[in-house]
Image (cartoon, rainbow, N blue to C red; front, side):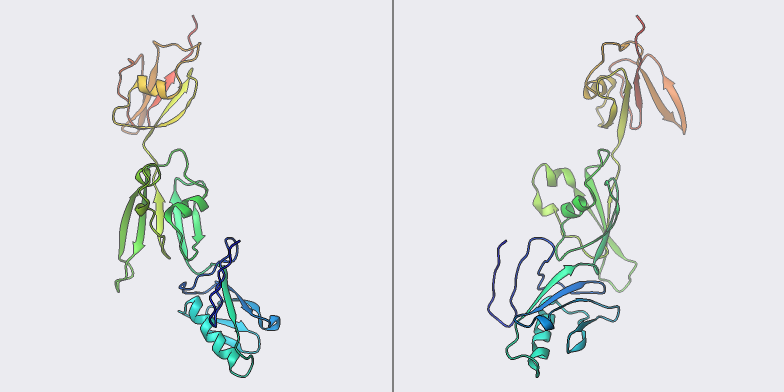
Length: 265
């Protein structure tokens, strides 16, 4: 663990795990602050920001911290402790729990839901917190963000190409998630291959997808496969229809189910 000291009235420490310093982070309701006064353990405390935007500090009592950064709070407490309590106090403040800033992530992630944001939480970090993407996830993320306009209902939409971000290393696409953001990972267009093939599963649809490409993606036929009796189950106007004895070069559509039956000869 690396420790950096800034010799001012406020000592800044960086911890990699549970305790995180965030000098420019604006605290809000529910955030939990760890306040340490050097050589004065009786003054040190853990305080949760109340609905009214206050924290409770030993000897001082309720202190208003609404809309203040961590650095500003440390400076304020330093001044309050200096006023008849401690000579030359040194105050350290860490965000023990981030609870005031939240974002929601839905769609094709393993654990969709509402997540607390740290000082800086990137798109990929939030996806990781949500358990990563499912195998049916599309290669894009749609982020809805409230604008700063007076009309609270207005919002902007940001679309991120996850393939460019992850596979091509375009890190500028790994944007910081803001309080109130709504992230949606759509389901990719897929088709399904089942029956006598080696890897029955769902596979990503491409415009050039065909029966032979689908079979290849699924690992090829098993020894029992009937290669001349392949079927496609396709939804047409809401009803499932079976296309029998399809050819290998037959184009397929999203949500098609390619069925390779067993050969009895």
